[in-house]
Image (cartoon, rainbow, N blue to C red; front, side, top):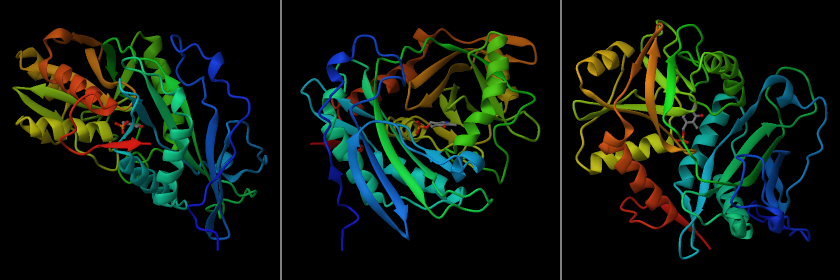
Length: 355
Ligand SMILES: *Cc1c(COP(=O)(O)O)cnc(C)c1O
């Protein structure tokens, strides 16, 4: 019998690598030469291969296009100054994809197959990983129901694909955020903790309305009262008040970010008091007025740390402390970036080298 881990590799004869201007890469539009593809059929993962990146042929009756059985992950590979290639905590993404899949009643991906496909794909396209400071290879694994059937029920067949995109340094100018008072991203008992495709569609309109008013991002609040902070855009949120690092707990309404967990772990390692608890807008604004709110930032794979410059709540805008004065977030950002690229120390064993 064929082992689940046997991956057929068909290298492309037409690499597009020489056509890429690595000094000028728009995010998410440039795709590396290869992709990993596998499918779940008749109760097993089968036909696993790495082949040239290209279009899929799909039926108009693809079940996931109609009813949204589709989940994804976002992670990165890095190359250091010695040319070594690293993944950052990949098992956390693999497990999270399966937790998302569970919530949408989808087949789980075989963890070993995911990791093996990922490593082989990144190794094969390692020339696509930009080496310049702050650049990386963005990795997009995703899983979707692939039955040709339009009845509402879980799909029997699934496809799992990984493709990659070289990305430039993420210039995150400090963002202006608006506290959302009408729309809800996630409610108790819902799918907010899953990286489910539909969650992002539901966030587009409120985000667009905020952008039209001049804000970069929303702060999502709880579905009941719109008083408690949940997260911002596709980032978890943290504040420093009175020297303590405070962040909303992970729950079924917030996405359990791997960057979030990494920042909290590093903070505890540095002896900083960390509180994972309900955090109201009122508490944040009162701390700001009293001069106790020294930092506010988002955490996520794309930017690592995205500084929040101002926060608008019920028509009133509040300018926060200058970014240069924010000791913890600047320090943890530099620490994590050095760790991930393999240029700094790795006291937690988070790096996985790809050879
Ligand atoms: C992916 C994501 C995050 C951040 O997760 P990381 O693992 O740190 O990249 C936070 N919030 C939402 C809604 C997300 O989709």
